[in-house]
Length: 49
Image (cartoon, rainbow, N blue to C red; front, side, top):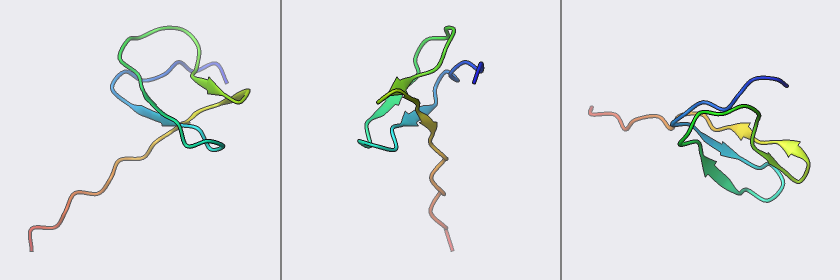
């Protein structure tokens, strides 16, 4: 994959559950265990009902 990491986003390893946060723009992708790390989805906000 040739996309770069997104600043301010968290990435996780599917093998060891390591989490990293991108704080600086650059070329390439975060990799762990030889595989690109997955972008974490946003957690839903609690309801105010």
